[in-house]
Image (cartoon, rainbow, N blue to C red; front, side, top):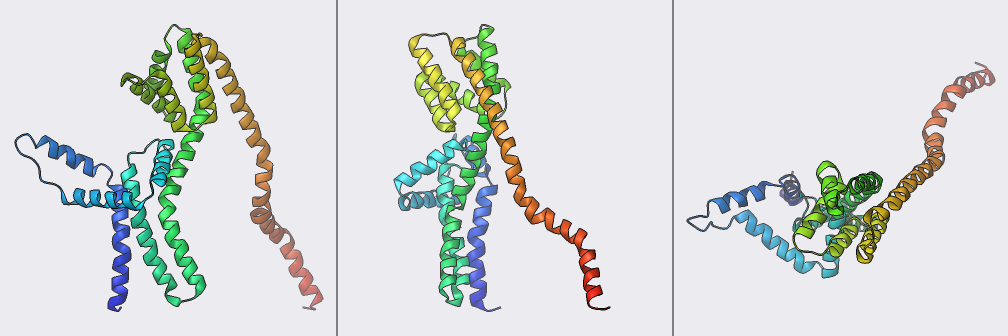
Length: 294
């Protein structure tokens, strides 16, 4: 192979290798920072080269990325539950590297010089740039679906705890400690915000905004209204829990009604053609042999 080919391969492989390393090595930098802070009792630790490079890359990415788009990415990460493997700074640093790798692949594709190859190269570059956004959006979609599915059970647990004599925050603490999933995490985080000094209204609204689930927003609005008007929380939770269960049953019935329509296309494309071949194939072969006089 020529030197130019090896150079193009290296230009493609190095950014992709760094991208894979940044996705896999989640806690390596945090562990290194903890060790450096533990050793900094008597002396000031020197700056790590990789940390300085990553910080410079994040600063450059923040300068090149519009502020509104950064805010949009921050909201997407909030809806996704802010995964530890993909903080905002890491996402901003990965996007240009992914676009660079896509651009290198696009240059190889566009080497033929045709207009279609150039458009394909541009599409590959744009697709690699927005690929992390699609992954974060997919995570947020799955998280919202999990919250919507788990919300009626959480409402029942809150109602039982409040009717047993616990306060609303104590009931939330019990649900957050005993439950699993994104809804329990949201309950625990809301209580942490309240303990940190935020008002109940702000903490509840932030919980609804982080999840972007309409049912949870309705529940939070009812709780805030009950808190403002001094109503009993149990009187608010009971109709909300009944409504959540009815909505969950209606969603299940809607999916069951859509199932026959969704099955039609796999039947037409993958099941009926092989069935016709198996049933009508021997008859067609015999007919051809008969008419051909063999």
